[in-house]
Image (cartoon, rainbow, N blue to C red; front, top):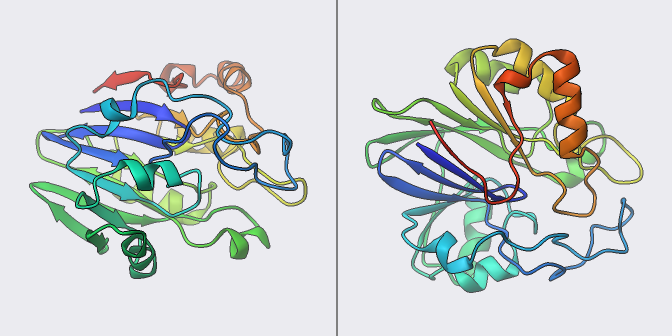
Length: 253
């Protein structure tokens, strides 16, 4: 498999001869407003430009998977750039209806287990924060990819470390793990996605897995930098299994 980290949570996953686009945020730097009442809320999002052209990102995509519909996972530029007949999978029927209402014609809600060609894609739970913010943040999901000729892949999505993430890791024992780790948060409340301690929990439970951390430094409410995470991992001695990509970096497994 090849995994290209585009920007924020946007991934290109080439898996068993299919190309998946995960959570596309394709707008130019500064193309939509900041998340309010949060760090850097005087800066428009995204904070950085795409590392490659939109055409390069979307050409040859077999399916788009949307773990949820927040702007930093499915923005207006994505809605305008993607072909209206492209296959799109959403986490549930409510999200599917929203995507259809934008004009897309081939939209399907994920079941718990899905067969996409000869790839099995399993929808996994997520919790988009802790405390009262979870009700506001809404539902999210993660994804497990399985194929006889590929390593197993877990894309955790916008979630913090909690019992269902631990259960997913223990159940599926994924060899490659992608977590959203910018510790994004508002001025009040707790983390919306994983912080360094959450990522450390993943690493301790899965010492033989490789962990890629994305969703960093791309939207205004980030709180965990790449450099701090790398230093933290060095101190906690899990650097060898950690990858903290720059936008545009590609890994082959």
